[in-house]
Length: 154
Image (cartoon, rainbow, N blue to C red):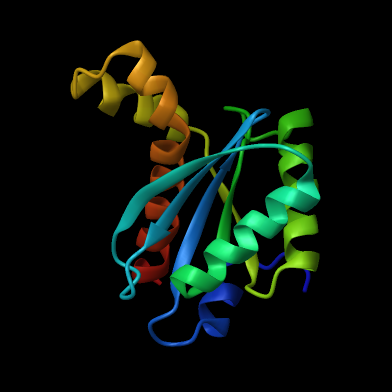
């Protein structure tokens, strides 16, 4: 299935199907999952990246385990709205996910997600070491929450 937009994805979701948010980094993938009502995004885990085929198998298992009906991948757009190499890489990975996995895949602008995640972790007074372990999954939760809010707003 090709990458769809969020509106298309909404029409493809079964009632109660949860969404998965992904923050794609060079070394890790932050993962967040919504509740069944698709209201709240929760940071779930950080996957250490290996080969994409192995990462896809790990995601496939999590999709089955969590009842995931759609995947939202963060798209790292530049502040001026243009797309650079990181955005193209995210589009490529999202396309591979869309081809390999059953749930529909949509992209979501992640411009401020990592900054917001870092600020919230600093406010929580987490040590640098603890922040490094969870920042990607918290960024994935910000990405997914933005998409959930957009879906609810129509």
